[in-house]
Image 1 (tube, rainbow, N blue to C red):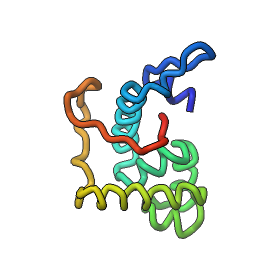
Image 2: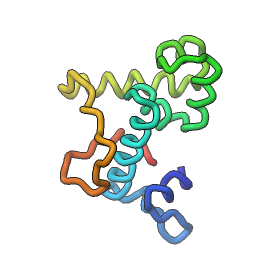
Image 3: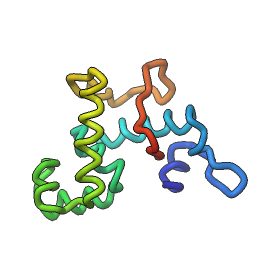
Length: 125
């Protein structure tokens, strides 16, 4: 989304849309996912917030009084797209050989890192 992209340092205007720059948008998306993990405390919720938006996820969590993705999904408090997206991303990670989710990021992690960056095809911050 344009506002989220700008929040993570990308130019988004009629003359230049850095969301289309694979390197810049991937780095911004990785930082955004890290921040969502820190905010929500689990990768399924971080992925749900990435897809549906932070506010939509927060409303769902408040409504259900639960931060369990499966419960939020079963109660249909998240959009169908998000209910499909989270398991799809987790499945792709498993197919690619990641039996476990990434190690939780540290609170003081540098924004510019030499660590590998992962992105979802077609995903934009």
